[in-house]
Image (cartoon, rainbow over all chains, first blue to last red; front, side, top):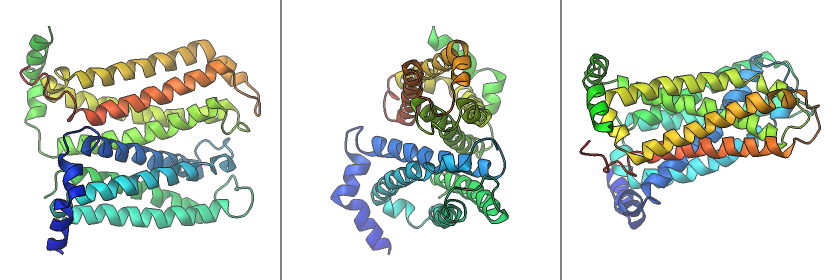
Length: 158
Length: 168
């Protein structure tokens, strides 16, 4: 495993990402990872607080488009995340905090897809969220916060 | 002018206290800064999209009910941002990219002020389903672009211009 991670990190692509003397490599990839974060977590949290009853005059149906933005954000962050991972595979791959981040994202994705099914699958979305959707919304709020926290702490936890 | 101010700030008791803070303060504030960013851009972005003509069936005033959450995000980021600057003033004042970030922030703020004072009522009175006037679309575009600029410059801080004021 270690050997494989080291190979990844020392691959041409890995070295380009981490060491190319251009702002388009590591800095821009990292910046796009933050753009993607905002595109995923921003709409997710708006949907979550609405389902928990905030801003009840807003029809939940109007937030159906949020998933498209979240998907684009997820696509950006999966790609930039893979690139960032390759460039630091050996440094970060074996750290527990990285696995906390991945696990929280994986669970958040499951929660989000269940939330979508619970609220948006049958015609017009109901304006009062069923209890199940409320629980999923609470889980989503917390899981994305955990993902952000673990992601940030990757720079600190050895 | 900046150098004396940065070194004065650096030696104030509050800055010294922050510099000697427990190791978790900086990562903790950074985490809040990223969470605040998501909250601010998520909510303000939704409002901007509405001004641009998305979600037309919903009155602008209804979408605006979410703006307190954007303010929560902004306040979090302002507070944590002040903590960063007060604890390492030279690192920020000496970096042109930080001034670019501040410039984008001022543009975003002025734009929001113009919206509130000149167009707020008109926007609130706009019936659902009706196309938004060009002025509102421009305001929304300026908002999205300037917040993207804030994010871009913020994320580029360690990489672009960080060496410029190293001696400051």
